[in-house]
Length: 108
Image (cartoon, rainbow, N blue to C red; front, side):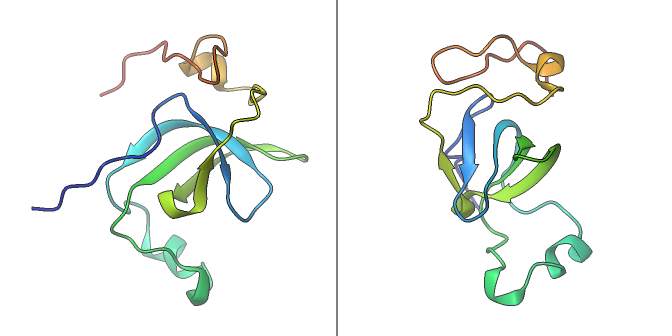
């Protein structure tokens, strides 16, 4: 039986290791759970292993807001202390406190 543990938690602010965006974790898949088309679109030399946690993020960069799906190996904790401005944050989370957003809705 495969056991995986997520390094980051719901409401935590993280940033991508290589690309200039950051976001708030709103869901976690224990292993890859997206489409093969999505995975195959990643250049082979950059493809992460599928047997690690993948995070759903309310993400932002300098140009836009979006939802991102990122492997654990490509994330680091964002210790800037700065809030994320994604417009969907109030739908799921409360106000930014001590580097985290407290969950405000019941998830399955």
